[in-house]
Length: 351
Image 1 (cartoon, rainbow, N blue to C red):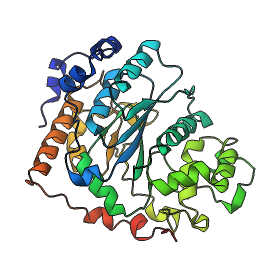
Image 2 (tube, rainbow, N blue to C red):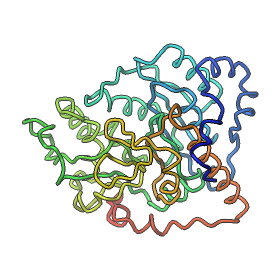
Image 3 (cartoon, one colour):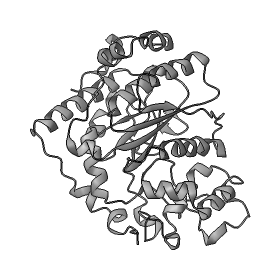
């Protein structure tokens, strides 16, 4: 599977916005030609639908290949396109979504500015849109520059092994408390820092959208810096709130367990084959494939197709092979590693 990085020069050129706008005139032909899975492959997957949000602003091909990799007819997909995105990109996303009953774009589009409340707002918009679809079990938020490391069947088995626990990374010891200002958080909530990437059960999303405590805390985050790194994490690591699936122990107990994403930050000893970073995050390339292969994370962040197209092709091949082998029972998928995580064994359960 792992071909030389020099081969990346020989792969097909980038597919532009017009390719998708024109190519979706016949949806059936588009889905067949692009190789979408249009049936639930197993009863287990059919009975465990997942809700995804995808926040994006450029590179229609990368977004479409992400969607294709995670697409199943029983799941639900909300796409938020940044208001700053080019019209051609937005129209391409509209046309792609129009080919699927369970893929939709948000009507409300936010001008996302890094470090502000506008980063968190699209997540909440998609949560509210997805909430109307009552069958899904877990919510996973993504960006358009990410890619799955697990098949849908593996995702389902992993999420089931969590038994309702939320997968939310956290830390308090290394938190930059000056971001939170001088205002006291409501309801005795202790702010906790963590990435915005989460995998959360449906009851947690319900709490976020409809519980007054969560709404009060959300209002407090509007006056802080980087609220996207505070809101979900703080709700998950304040056990007195009693939110189902949240963590009952200390936030730093699980600080080093980041199963939602494989992500390499700039620093000493970091593994980043191309040594290229954007906002401190490694741009993953073919040289990183051995680490992605061994990762227990659900998704990887981040990829730039204009830098390396082969890495996504390799990951697609791996997903295809694992999906095929899983169906033919050639491979078993052991979830014991996930079941033993502290956030699973020390979760708060519903009364």
